[in-house]
Length: 429
Ligand code: RNT
Ligand code: ZN
Image (cartoon, rainbow, N blue to C red; front, top):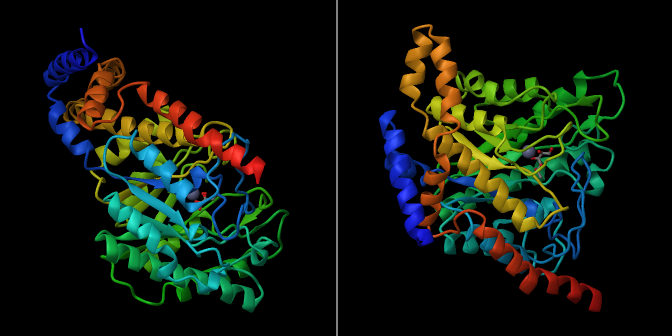
């Protein structure tokens, strides 16, 4: 039997099986194709950016580990890697860009001087790919962030510098959203915090609230730009106190009507974000997720089809939040092929959404409402061995992307033909 035929027949059988549970797999596939995932540019170069040639960004607890060969060191290379990645992922997605990935034409531009001009080549790239974009001010890996404080800094001048950077970032976000016809989510994350126990927890938080109010003072058209604020529990070097904690930003988002960004790695190790979605969504209009995989700490491992990833997708789907919860990825692994990392993580996110969409949710709810928890547990467990893979394969085939492991052949080929040559170029320079 040909592979195509095999995929088709497996799908027919799966469709029947899901159909018996009242789930229409064709409709599920159509719904899945409409869900964009925001792919983070920073997986491609270990959060390096292009402010200076060969920039290596770190700080604020952000740490990519590994030295897998072939890292993108130019804008063209990163875009080529993204093109390669996108060709291996079903659906139409978004690009999440950091301000440090600007196109400065080779001349250094300080962060308080960035303009939409510096992002036009990215906008053109997104247009060509029919993608939306999201944006982030880069408030780390900078001389003015070296002592661990940015927007909440006690020095008024340093605070003003970061306020300007964030204001400009919002304007760039608005231009991106306007050009691409879909709102850009501009997400503010800062590393501010203390390594050791502070005696004043209050003042930095009050300064941060005031600084953010300044950043968001200019009203921007919500059709172009949406603001988000990202909370965090701790970072390396900020273990004892983080100014922008969860409670701080939850309250900020609620009172200032911004989006809240919830990163899967930004809580205590046994805490999960899946349980938080319905809690915050009861009060907030929209949120942004940074889907990540913390291993013992905020390690930003490549997202896999873990129980928690499935739980996140289930909560988004069950809660009917697909229009209000924006899905972004946030991981960076430099120890494996970086394109492979993007592809695995993004495909897993989509797989988790597919599994969630394939749930016979009405039936499950009926069991729960009737107090039949035995049946609820029986069915949720039974669902795990239904032929989900056949539906996934069929979706990939329909979207003309590799089915199964075939994507890896493409990545290996690209590594051989493109990535390995980059390292030789670096050596011969
Ligand atoms: C850091 C935050 C933040 C960054 C990116 C690069 O802990 O998760 O989202 O990962 O802005
Ligand atoms: Zn994040």
